[in-house]
Image (cartoon, rainbow, N blue to C red; front, side, top):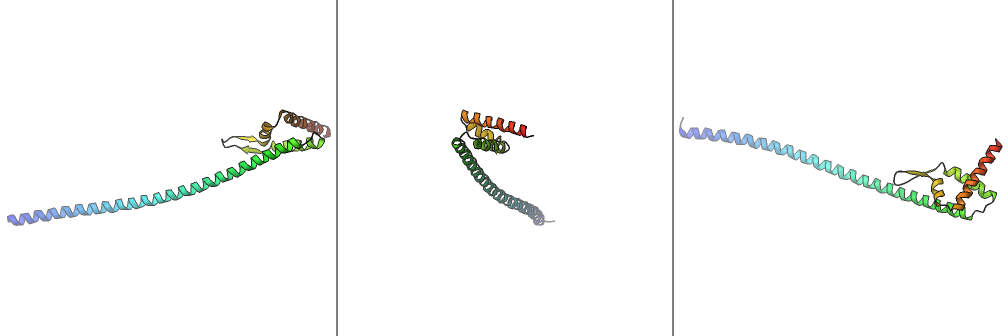
Amino acid sequence: MSKKRKQEWALLKRIKLLSARIDSLTDENKTLNNKLDSTKNELVRYKNDNKLLKIRLDDVKEQNSVLQTKVNDHNHSMLTMSKKLNKSEARNIALTRFVKETTRNQIHLKNGQSITVYDAIMNKLSPEDKTMVRKTMDLEGNKNDRNR
């Protein structure tokens, strides 16, 4: 075989190796592009999920604000009402019913704890009103015992 022929074979062999390398790199590039597309799609999904979570969080914050306003209004109304009521029997009956109802209802605080409406209101009452509420409960309890 002539020197020229050997050079041609060597060049053909080198071309085949380079062609195989190009094919390998092309396949690797396709794989990486597919992974990139998948990652981009996943990023879009995460961004959409994040938007939905932010919307839900805003809704929860709004609901919490509305509920807190209602609790504040309720507390204000109850305190105003308790100051206006006189010491008559009607006041005692109303307070007793109120106490019974509020000892069942819970207020869920932002810190994860909860407190009864009764305890929240009792904490806001003057010492005289607290005494009146307790006396009223005692009187109502004695009436119930006599009626049995």
